[in-house]
Image 1 (tube, rainbow, N blue to C red):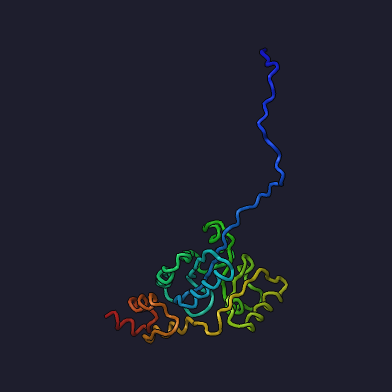
Image 2: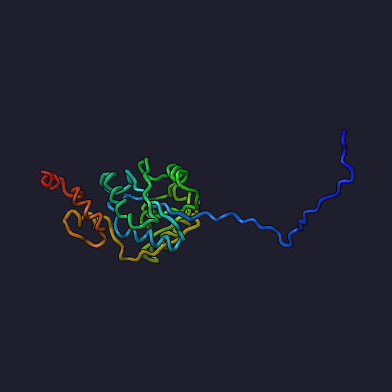
Length: 227
């Protein structure tokens, strides 16, 4: 066997660092998920999403129209609501529509939504009235993510805090967004569309589409328009 003899050790000039190496993971983007009936989408929805971006530091917001909302009157057809939502969000590149195949956003469907979207730190956008509507224990949906909650007053915020922290399973990691007392009601927007009046809060794209498709009109009036 051939053996190498007298081979000098080679020095590459490596020197130990003087400071410890600290590896920091790249922070994930913060993204919001905003579900609702959006029947129809109006200025108030857009304002809440914009304020949530600023207050909670969200880079993007995904609007999730529900096919069958848990409460309220029977909404306009999902396809129409989704189209109006896409039209309304077109000027805002940081907003997108997520097509939820389930009837509504639940704890299970939320997991599927998050797994289908890019990796991020997700927040759930909701309103104080939505949280206060539930009697007793809140659904597991609200315990899955950081909550960004729209409130209209300090009194309403206090009421929400009492509900969220007063149970045996209190919720933490909350962010409140003050949308003011001069909020917009979807019911008032639907009434304006039904009466042919451009009331406060109606988006121009929604007005045009709803008039073209005869949405939110009484059944008899719809039939007379189509003849």
